[in-house]
Amino acid sequence: MPASYRRKGMAVKLSMRVLGFMTGTSLDACDMAILETDGETIAAFGPAGERKLTDATRDIVLEATRQALAWPRGAPEPEVFKAAAAAVAREHFEAAEGFLAEHRLAWSDIDLMGMHGQTVLHERPQAGRVGRTVQLGDAQWLADAAGVPVAYDFRTADVAAGGEGAPLAPIYHLARARTAGLRPPLAILNVGGVANITFWSETGDIAAFDTGPGNGMIDLLVQARGAGRYDAGGKYASVGKVDETVLRGLLAHPYFKSPPPKSLDRHDFPLAVLEKLQLEDAAATLVAFTAEAVRLGFELMGGVPTEMVVCGGGRRNPQLMKAFAERLSVPVTTAEDHDWRGDSIEAEAFAYLAARTLRGLAISYPKTTGVPAPMTGGRIAQPTV
Image (cartoon, rainbow, N blue to C red):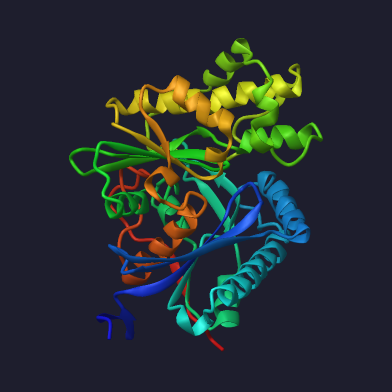
């Protein structure tokens, strides 16, 4: 029998089988991964997979995002949030049903789930004003439907305490690197809609922040030009030319001079400055922008790691990987170079964070989100039926 402890009258196994979910701002798929973990060490990696989001869910989330961006502070939340949260929860449940069946598992084999939810708004704190962050997903419905507790709402407590609410994956990046036998100084770059980086120093500390855009701006550009949902394989950027004037203008944004920790929303950089460029040149310029933002992040941190490991969907864009290699003074590798599951790192991370939430362990830190002290976060929805 696994060791256990008690939390609010409930016995909790120290080693749990946790199903983590992640749906990114690209609105591509529901990623899933199972970890066996106590929230500190990783005992085993279970299966991982994904299920593409339905058009109906994508559409309602896009509408929720549109309304979230126009939502005044202090006003009631948009009505569409509730419907979008229900749709997101059902996507998670249906995705997991197929995933578990595929791997000959049942809900009774899962001790806990970690659901990040779908981000529709993220505003970083400003002087005299706390941030706002909204991740939609009906965790109670999911817990009841599956009969399994769900850890969720990982960012709200951090933001309420004055933190950035992001990134949250760094503590998992540290655990993953240690499990793989890697050594500091090391950088781990996740390229999703926004790119975020974790620095693991030789003293054992971790620091992290959002460097700038990841895939998000490129996706929005391609969609705005009616050329698809994303630049598959970097085909547009590969034949385009970087507009150095536009690039310098993008890099002049005050975000890049502000000290970390800091965070971004994928909509923080408008596409208007790219309107005069043809699609291919605009895509090439955004690729350079993403890489240069990472380079500026290295300058802010001061030291140079021995390696940067790239995970997330951006590592599949050969133009982005080429730009990282050309513009950064550090060896660049991919998650797969270390036998990591590069498409599943964030789903794994929220499985890990779910275990930490259940055990009351810290998930955010002064050097990762800017909170005053290491703090717990997240809530647990227990099945009621």
